[in-house]
Image 1 (spheres, helix red, strand yellow):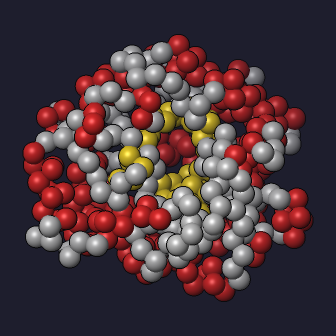
Image 2: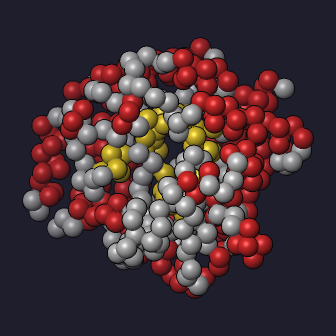
Length: 364
């Protein structure tokens, strides 16, 4: 049973407080339980040397238990960047700013390599980017310049270039927020946005960038806490079940679109979830629907609750053994990106990296 519980813990990505140099008690306890992935936020970052030391310490802690540890962060650029010049990293422009460069595909490709080099230098293995939402609603409170464009074709082209470039350097990418958070006027950090478009419109505009990501072998795709009536069952819509808990939506992603990587969902402590569901209920619904990894970014008690909810559902048979094995297998595959750094800290925030960014922004 403890072996099964450890596998349950491997599906939960944990966050923690404080910018420590070594794994703190919170991190050590989750790693001991079986967690194989953690997420860093700005609250965990003071300097390149500190981040590298922290990540190395956590990875060694995992190795002591015979496991790898995947470290991830949200390093999109612009307003969503956990590693910035304030902490001596290279500032990365927003996706929209990069897309405005004269050689936009070249800019995306080269800047993704800068990002990969700095992430690997501090022992971060995965970037929760790119944003593949099509920015088609100017009233959207959460996407805006995080999106490359209001053109579905451009988002797909540039997002695909980013994925190929960063993964060629050994950093996993995660495309988000499937099936598209671009045309909403609500923020899923607060409540569940509703995407009211027809299936034909979704297939024409929102879905193609994710198809391109799958063609480019993206390591992971994050499903958003969105209500998408045209892709869901009437009963799910009536109950307010979001896409992140919908078997119809995840089956569409895995079976119809042929995605074979890891399916993530956005933070389980966001308002779209906590206002409407208990954490345990939400986790189990999502796992049954086909989700593989769950971000629980803040509270250790919530992380423990998530692990126990998965364990109870697996033990009772509520979660099909095949579904559980599939999730564990997809997480194991993703762990191929978990590695030690191969380059020195000298690249982080370097004049060469700053010059690359500057040259593209100036149109050279």
